[in-house]
Length: 406
Image 1 (tube, rainbow, N blue to C red):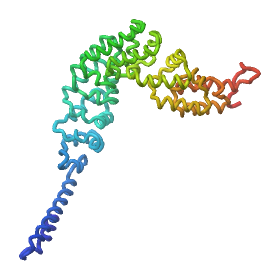
Image 2 (image 1 turned 30 degrees about the vertical axis):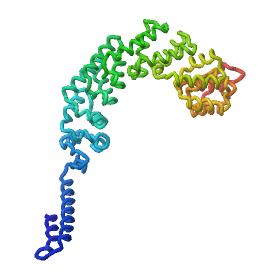
Image 3 (image 1 turned 135 degrees about the vertical axis):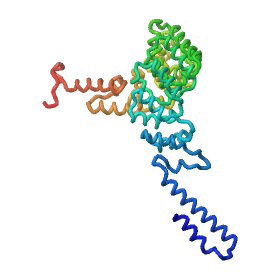
């Protein structure tokens, strides 16, 4: 009523008088714009808490499905987050919010988990209930129990709710099961690399065949093939997406560089899936640099690679930076050649470990680098042994250690 009264008051001076047509037109536009703004404010006041200005129709965006918005709001889903990252989902005509939530609850998800899943992957509400049920039954066949399945869905909702190529998924599962692979390995593959299950099973058969032939041709034991294959797939789920030719190219290059069959088998077992990602050009650059930096003979170079296969897949700038960092702190070329695994560590980690050992009187430059290589746990064990050795009296190496209280 106030808006209407305001409009009337604005027009009253014009009644019964002749006015300039241009002035009347201008005042009419101003009045219309003011009235529209007022109506918009009233409309926003009448919308439920789950709605916002984005639910209104705009020239560049479809209006939201208010029923979908309200249903998600009732599940405590962060509507603002969905709008920001996947706003198009809220504009779809067909959505199955309550059905999707009910299915997740039946599998053991609580309200908090359901809300988190729908915030992370709101596209889940667009899946037809019958398709989601079929997907659940398919995944149950490779998951030990529904609790573990729910854990996978929570971490990889996009993988579970990708319902395309259902027949291909089933065929690939049956094929991998025929290889007697562990169920957990298969479920991890489905969660981490769903693309490998969406493509025709023949493509995966070709890659597996290449892996099998490669392993056996290099002298691998048939009895260990399944274990090796499981480790391979577990370490890099995307291995099935690598072209089979990549394996042949990488191994062919290393064979040309003089690696024996036994040495290649050792590399394949060490690098596992990584060898399929190696390109001959990059490996050539890395080997040439290491050979020159460490002044290696061909045999010494092969031993460096076997002891530290990582040099094959580190980029040239990474290798140069790490080697130069070692030289800057006084480490010798011969030390690096004897303990090439030190190149697996960043310069920052190397400096920290050297300084920590120096604080206890151990000078790495006059000893072996083996004490600083390995994981954090490996280093702590090595450092602990050196530290304990310091606490023993020099005149009696087997004397009991002193406690902190003493």
